[in-house]
Length: 618
Image: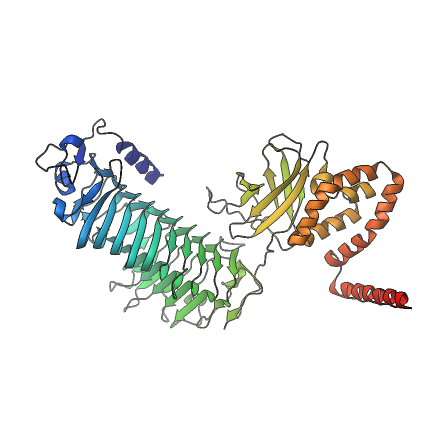
């Protein structure tokens, strides 16, 4: 990826004073002097302001750690020069605005790789600005810190020039009381590449990340917001398309991809984790929010997701964002749908979550512990909201009618099969999902959206699972493992887990590796109906509770020896079959019988118990 290449270049430059075809300049706020030559640390300039007047595209400026301010000779705002790379030299140089209105901006259009790495920005109303009228393609701020400001980073892109792109990677934002950590506004042209990746936004910001389009501005899904951590922001991420410009053909569009972000509202008095909003302009100029939202975790907000449109009968404003593999947890509302002035004849008057699972990517989100999963008070149509989710308990909605959601069990339930030879790498076991369970893997590349597999608490990498979502079967390739009891933990991207134990031992077969030792020995066949019934009891009931799992672990330790002893004695096999019969009947009652049969069995069992007790009392 382009940004990764830029980061590598910057880190290499920071350790070398000169490179072929590049000039290295040095700045030291304490020992430097702008009358020096600036070509070595011992002959450094005093100010970055002066160094930028000397540097050309392709040059590198190395800043010695220290405080850079008006007191050391800096003139704010400092205009960043296209093609120049700036980095700290063995530490973090801090640029202190002492209450200035603006700390850094652009001296001109950015048309080449332009980077700042390992720089601290503090104490100004806005710390870094891509001001209106500048085009930007190749700007990178990496491993920088932003503190004590109303706005950390602001980009206002209002030029139709193609190739708009910038990256913020691994930066830290902190404010005692700030307005916005990161603000991006596109009012003309397109932001079609770049990312906000692995940034940390902490502190009392009104809004953490704001992505906004106006007029015919466009933010495409080529611009990715991923792996960011936000905590304490009143609004975590806000995607806002606002029609404007007086041209009815304009459609302001925000379609940035939002992936694997952690948005934590702990400590906020109230707020919204993720807000998606499209609103018409005064002349009904259109607006669209189409951000794909995947694998985000949004917790402890009054409203985890707010999706809203401000429309009229022309119906040109819409939110239609694919929504998949997210985890929402809180105590108030999971998703709140607001549709102001909707057209009741067109369901797209309402915000929605994109295509259905059988025709699109949306689906398999987790809702946990909300008093209200969906607030549809002002919605006109509700058939695109609940079909993609599973819940902690039955879904709860205010107003509207929800489709029957696709419920998946938590914990996941499945049978595990496969023969595992001790100390041999590459052995394969297969998990086959039971009714109500499934394995969800979106195969989007990297760790994002991929199912997680742990063996004895250690992650093992898996190729993307080629199966329908949710998949009913998955194969797991194991590393070399010793004989004994082992534990697999499977976690869907949406957070559902399944815990599966299996025994590896010399000469083990499918029956032993799946744990039905005594039953298999008694009936002589791993696939005997009685053995299948007992496996169902284990997987659907015992494995879903802590006492049941404790029993399974005990049985896995003691069962193989008992099974070996029974297998060699015909009379012991016959006795074991009789002894297991009550458990087989109970298992079938729980896993195979219909409710009427279960009730009749319960009545019969209760009557037999009373008769036995009465007989003992006579």
